[in-house]
Length: 341
Image 1 (cartoon, rainbow, N blue to C red):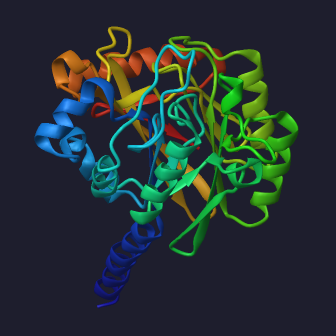
Image 2: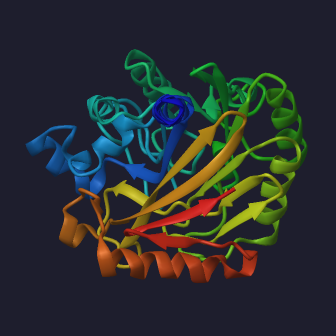
């Protein structure tokens, strides 16, 4: 009789204990650059704003928080800024797709969000607000651009900040000028330190580096480490359009480039990317899962596809190789890369 009772107690412990652990776990999913104009525009016109997310939306919807970098204004207003080689502008209706796919927070701190001037930026903010999609990194002045977003999930507070360290410099916000938050070292130190007192977990997004450059520059490494030293848990980098290495530093993790996601170009260099899924439990970051995807638009037609088996292993092995200089250990399991903290 005693053995039966003991067995029942152990069984109940594992049943309810595991369920409680599952309930406590919080997931954050992040992807890189989203640009829903240019070559992608006719596909959205024909198939609707949910078109790019057909094979990936379930991942964003299942997560507690989903993040991306929005690489163009969503507007019908403004004129293209002069003397800029590439200017992008997507129709405001694409916000329906972003919302429907499950995105919660978007960084506007990049080198394209003001491609059609302040008027288009302001409309972008209005459109995102109307869809209840949070945004960071740009505003009517530098104070607004530096404003964080704080989300509460299962009694835990997640804070988000975003900065752009890319040109043109005229896109950077000032006291009485709209634009993006430039990531000055002193500014990042101040913002992160202040926000950390209000949240349990802190995520900082940087638009930085050079396009198609694999290795981070010295200032990127220093800036990322500074943010973690002041309390950041996760650094999310973008702009190179291709994947870069991953560094674990102190109690945080740095992804120097998340690569592209749904991006309206036929780039021959940005063929592979990944979805990054973070898991938090209790008071710490527990795990990062790397889900390889194809973003080679000549094949996937602007619908990122999840890679499996040998194709996935090839991408993950490349990330492993790029992360060697940071002594980061990535395990490969069932077509997914795993980093445990």
